[in-house]
Amino acid sequence: MNSESFDKENSEEKIPNSKNKSQSFFSEVFKFVLLALLIVIPIRAFIAQPFLVTGSSMDPTFKNADYLIIDEISYRFNEPKRGEVIVFKFPKNPSKFFIKRIIGLPGETVNIVEGEVFVDTGEDNNGPGIKIEEDYVANKGSGNLSLTLEKEEYFVMGDNRMASLDSRNWGALPKNLIRGRALLRLLPINKLGVFPGFAN
Image 1 (cartoon, rainbow, N blue to C red):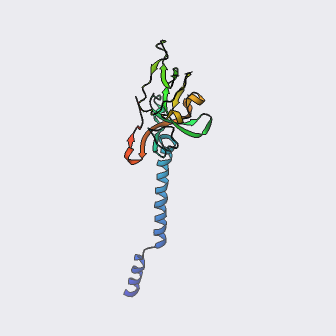
Image 2 (cartoon, helix red, strand yellow):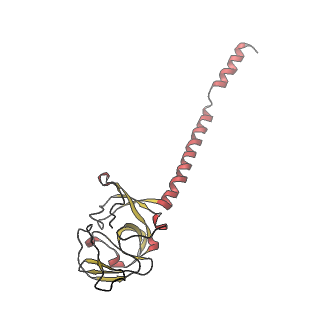
């Protein structure tokens, strides 16, 4: 073999194979997409879910188009608490999702007297119960109601009482319809925060 043919063979070996490079690129993209799906899908399905507020039923706490992240895992280990803001399937139409605040817990009796909310925990039979201080409510409205909750039932209300379709209208919320609690508010940026709207 002469030097000319030797140089030619060496130069051919150094020419990159564009087909192999293309296959390698698509293989890496596929691996990245697959890995992303393996991470994102379980998170979306079991841990956290985005939620866009629509309507004014939670004014002034949440405005229309507020963007939230819902914690879907906590209630697998802990019971919902009074004052927490939750997202749930609407009992009358489970294809719709509502956002409201927990007012009454299982076994309690919720009494509303002229718009004021009282909770009877069963420990004290005097009067309508303990008055719930609701600094987050701008317009309490009026009206009277009394509802005793069964096991794994909750009484929920919107913070904008005059514009909220809630437990006053359709009754108790079964626990199995609760998707999770408001964990983060991402938008608007100036209201970014953890556990937005939570009240003790």
